[in-house]
Image (cartoon, rainbow, N blue to C red; front, side, top):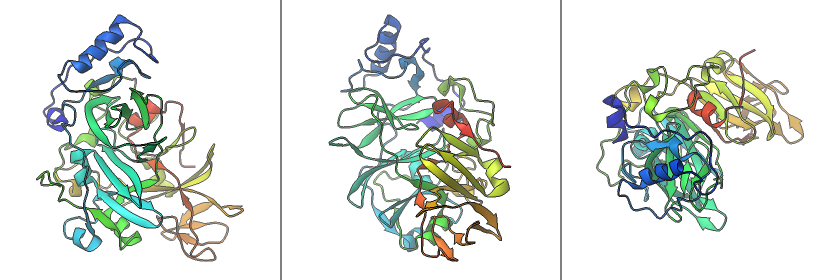
Length: 384
């Protein structure tokens, strides 16, 4: 498995990147050689390798073959009460809410599979996690008239998971949701708002939520972290990451990053000072809440025992015809206009706005190196 190679400190052979990006058919002998290397592993592919939107040399082997890290295709769920018997309070889960109904996907399971193909509220959804980039992202599984489901290619680009869809076998970049090789190259998947938060927070916000069951059919004893100490390193694994590191923040600093629009990110070390950040983007005015209480999935030997790294949530701060401003006072996030208190689901729990709700915004908690690699011109926020 990729993680076994990672932990053993083995450096995998890295394909040399060509000098410039290629769009369309490979236009040089070196590009064709790189594509030939992808096919040299004897894996069956139906991908149209003549269509590329990235330099092929940026895509490297992560260790496992195609589907060597198996996606979960037939997920089953259990109640919060049942999951409470095996999930720890600070353990990280991906919380997805659709039409007022919530589901939690524990990272102790996602860290072993990286992809869950699900249907939630009659909508095909793709729940993904790349441990090397700390990217927990959820996509709508529909593209044009196609409904897609996904597997792992066994490849990485900029240390990030490269997925493939089983309908066209296009290769997709998980961090950006972009098709990069094949028939759908250049197409973007739609992000769905979802938060990585502690099990305690998810359960408190949605007591009746369903939880991805450990009964996946793979016979894995979920809970062990295959990436022990990863987020205490100074940077990503060199053989998996070729670009220059952005020096504005430490490489493995977690950032709250808005997934749509021009790009905006706030490091957790700055958010911890104020617990709230506001801004304007091309998708409108927004607010990010931060609070402590979630463990890192890639720190200790057990996912549940990782150090506290905090959690964030992002919302549109427009409510009706008003644009709200926020502060963290008395242990709560409150708007300055009315003093109403707001929870981590964007719901007003007291004050004049009690019962109202802010619209969630798609965002992630990426490692800084990964966000900066895919969004090099991102705006960054620092505490005032």
